Amino acid sequence: MLKRIVTGAVYVAVIVAFFALRAVDPRFFGILVYAFSLIGTYEMVHALAHERIGADGEVIPAVMPMSRAQKACVYGYAVLFTPAYYLAEFLYERAGYRSMITLSFLFGLVLFCLLVADHKNSDVKGIGSAMVCGFYPTAILSTMLLINSLPDASALGLLLIFVISPVTDTAAFFVGSLVRGKKLCPTISPNKTISGAVGGLIFGSGASVLLYWLYTLATGYEYAGVLSGWAGAPWLIFAVIGFLCAFVTEFGDLVESVIKRKVGIKDMGKLLPGHGGILDRIDGTLFASLFVYLAFLLLVM
Image (cartoon, rainbow, N blue to C red):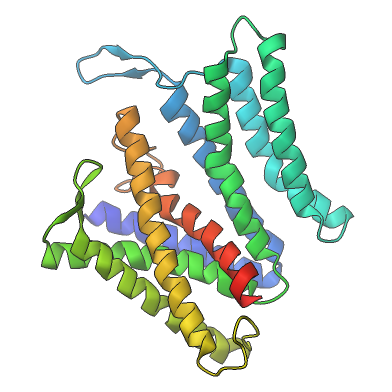
């Protein structure tokens, strides 16, 4: 438990440090996203496409094997994605998203070309594995880059992601431990309870409203989104955002639990002692990032 607490504290300190750097220049935050992308991609490739040694020493074949060329394509996609975004933003105003789309189509095209160029080693199953490892986490993390570049309240959007997700997880753990009751998804994650999930949703909603209030006090931000003519609109909108963000956070955690169960591993990595890998820490955050970006585009901006 002590190891888990210390690791969690270090992780929070790193996130806070990048938020401080972001105040100097928002592009500094891209370094954090880039690190998530590179480390998360390695963890996915290692989990899906590498052989493992079982407890009794037997060799367990890869669940979704890839050729060396397909792995190189996945890593190349992760290595180029974030720099390409910022290069496009530097050369052409607000054109970063075009680089994301172009690079993603190129990534898929190269994978199909490898069926011819590397036909002895690359197969269709490897294409599916490579696309999964490219999409999760790199492509999903693109929404975090897009939030970071929003013209208004971008800091609020990022705070919602990095606060609601851990608040939801922590509340779900403590409420579930205290109240207990019926299991949420016993065949996927035996320790999660319905009471914990409900507690996570409630505290996630509260964290969102509190963040909105503190952000307006600190920055003078004025809500100009849906129903902005009604004084109660921002409180309602951010409560809904918090609730749904907490929901997708919990769902994202279940998705990764399924992946690990299908692959036959306990953790996606060993980088964070007591927590596992980066993907074990940001699984819900990935889903929250996509949702918050869509919520800001449709409701807040």
